[in-house]
Length: 44
Image (cartoon, rainbow, N blue to C red; front, side, top):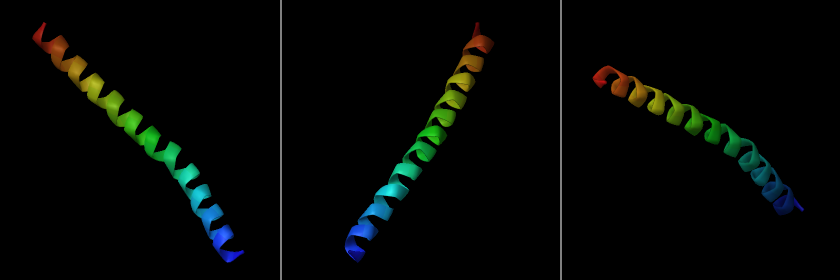
């Protein structure tokens, strides 16, 4: 029973952490694209 509850809680934490890391990755990606866009606009 303890093992089952441990697995359940670990799965729950993963399900909670995944969207968190995904949002950080998306924000970083958008910042990178904006920076690249600014560089391109400077050269043009």
